[in-house]
Each structure stands twice: as C-alpha cells, then as structure tokens.
Amino acid sequence: MKYISVLGSTGSIGRQTLDIVREHKDKLKVTALAAGSNIELLEEQIREFKPGLVCVYDEEKARQLKLRIGDLSVSIVAGMDGLVACGTEPAADTVVTAVVGMIGIRPTIEAIKAGKNIALANKETLVTAGHIIMPLVKEKGILLLPVDSEHSAIFQSLNGEDKRRVSKIILTASGGPFRGRKLPDLYKVRPEDALAHPNWAMGNKITIDSATMVNKGLEVMEAAWLFDISIEQIQVLVHPQSIIHSMVEYIDGSIIAQMGMPDMRLPIQYALLYPDRERLESGKKLDFLKVRQLTFEEPDMETFYGLKLGIEAGRIGGSMPTVYNAANEWAVAAFLKGKIGFMDIAAIIEASMRQHKPIANPTLEQILNTEQETYDFIKGYTRSV
Ligand code: NDP
Ligand code: MG
Image (cartoon, rainbow, N blue to C red; front, side, top):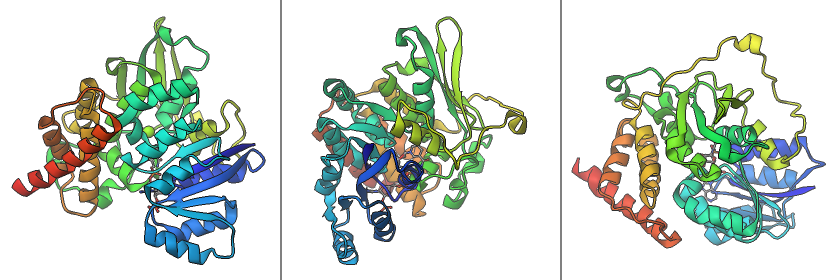
C-alpha cells in the first residue's frame, strides 16, 4: 500500500489523482488533502477518501469546513503552515504536488526534507527553486517523479538507459488553441477563446500558459532540472495531435518516444504506482488507424515569444526564471480578469525580465523577494503604459 498526500486535490490534476486512487483502492490510500478554498468539493473528497488531515489555505473557509464535517474525526488546518503540515503528514510516503503556482515551493521543500517521495505536477516550483530542490532530492535519496505528461514521457524513455548517452530531448508541444495564428490576430483574443484547448482539459492557469506557449517555456526549464540536461540540448517540437508525449534522442541516432492518448491519468498513475504498471480500466487505448497521421512543426517563437523568453530565462538561470514565472502568474491572473490583453502577457514578462539583475543561486528568501519585487515592478509598469 502507498500512502499519499494530495496538495491541490480539488484541481484538475488533484481530481484525476483521486480517480486513480479510486481505481486502485488496494494499492493507494489518501492520508492528507489540501486545497485553496473549494470546501464543497473538499467535503465530498473527505467523506469518500477519509484522510486524517486536511488543509484549506483560506482560514475563513477552513473554519466553515470544520463546521460542515463536525461528524468526522479529521484535523483541519489552514494557511501555509497547514499546507506544509499536509506535505509532511507522517503517514504519507508520497506527496502529489498539484497546487498551481510558486505557492508550492515551501511545502515541496519541506516534504522532501521529511523524506517523502514527490509526484510533481507543480512545475512552477521546480522552475523557480530547482537549484535548491534537486540537491535536496539527492541528499535525501527520495524519488522525484514527474506528473507532467512530457516529463513522464522523457522519464519513461530514459528507463534503463545510460544518461550520458543522451544527445537531446525532444519536448513536444500541442501548439495550443492559437497554433498557426499570427500576431495581429491575437491581440483581440478573449479569455474564453484562450481557455478552449484542443487536446487537454486542464486548470485555467495552465490552459492560458498553453495558449501563450509559456507552458512550454516552463517545461524546458522543468526538463533541464529533472534530467540534469542543458537548455541547449532540449528541442521544442510542435506536434498537434499530442500522441507522442516527448522523446529522447541518443548519441547513436536512436530515438525513444512514449506515446498514448492525451489523458493525464496515465502519467499520474505512472508516478503513483512507479515502478509498476497497472491497468487503467477507464482509459482509452491509442488506435493508430484512427489517428492515422502524426505531424510536426517548428514552434513559431516570434508570435509565441513567451516561449523564447522562457528559454532565455532558463539560459540565464539564477533568479531570472523566478521573474519569468512570477510575471507570468501575475499577467495570467490579470488576463483572466479581463484587465489586460492576451499579448500583454508576453510583453509583461519581457519588461519584467529586462529590468531584473539576476542573482546567482538565490536562497528561498531571495526567490520569494524576487517574486514580490516582480509584482511591484509590474504594478508600476502597467500604470505607466
Ligand atoms: P487547477 O487550477 O485546476 O487546480 C489548482 C489546485 O490548487 C486546486 O486544488 C486549488 O484549490 C489549489 N490551490 C490553489 N491555491 C492554493 C493554495 N494557496 N493553497 C492550497 N491549495 C491551493 O490547476 P491544475 O490542476 O491544472 O494544475 C496544477 C499544477 O499542475 C500546475 O502547476 C500545472 O502547471 C501543473 N500541470 C497541470 C496539468 C493539467 O493537465 N491540469 C498538466 C501538467 C502540469 P481550490 O480549488 O480550492 O482553488
Ligand atoms: Mg505538460
């Protein structure tokens, strides 16, 4: 039996994680759940999965939840301390990090320090604090298993191979809902257009990141940390069908790919049950005769220059990825509220990066300060333009 704590259980990845637990009740048991504020869904999850510890980040909502589940013996905690408590819950051996954004940094670090294995969905954490997390993973001897479909594919394609024989990683991208569109077309895009992803149903933030291709910028940095490979050895390839989830090219020219239907439950299950493979009864099998064609394109980095900026931030390193990520988090939230336009997202990221003097190897405190300074800069910047 594996005991798991799910941070972000009410989100897209969190809910699909619980689907996997439902399918493998004999192998997986939930010990802790955490969410931001959705106590209605959290209550249902508590009644079904019976964790001993639950965190609601919002303190008032945590109080309300306590009243709603007075008939159950479950501890309710709140805030960052509560999130960390769920990440370090003594009975858990694996923590699924499925919160959205850099808020995941502290609970992830504390979970690793407590010796938990990590099933990592929350890429923003690795992008901003990879230089702190990866040495800690090594020191503690824990497993950091990717949930992101591309990274799961790379992980599976590296299985049993000598990493020194890798020549490059080919990171595939669907291209999002605006693939093939050009700049003048994109200024007027509304949140509802950007939220209509062709292949994946995901949380709002990552869906916008896919539309801008900032998601791929984050994923390049995520892959560099996870697989200890240079940014130069990562090629982004647009593959609109999302069947090949990513590939590894070896020095002899062989390429190993992982394929399957676009269904996040596959990489989630792989991370949770690793190294075992089990049936996914409710999943669809890939039928090549139905797909018929797999196509590939060069990413359009002029139109989707958020991707280009991500690669640049990764090359510069230090605190620059934090600026890239924080500016994006701010801009995506503003875009979803209708306060800025679609193309302003990349413009805000670029302006934030241009004014920043990168700090090499930032401490956790410096990362969080850089995040705040970026928000402060953007507030001034958006007032001035
Ligand atoms: P969602 O927006 O669907 O879910 C986010 C989850 O985080 C919710 O449970 C939310 O709770 C919770 N949350 C938000 N803020 C806090 C907080 N302060 N404290 C505790 N919990 C919080 O996001 P996704 O599931 O789409 O994405 C999660 C992560 O996984 C992201 O980093 C994303 O990049 C990554 N990812 C997602 C994929 C996908 O298919 N969705 C694919 C690959 C990676 P509440 O509901 O209460 O707000
Ligand atoms: Mg992905």
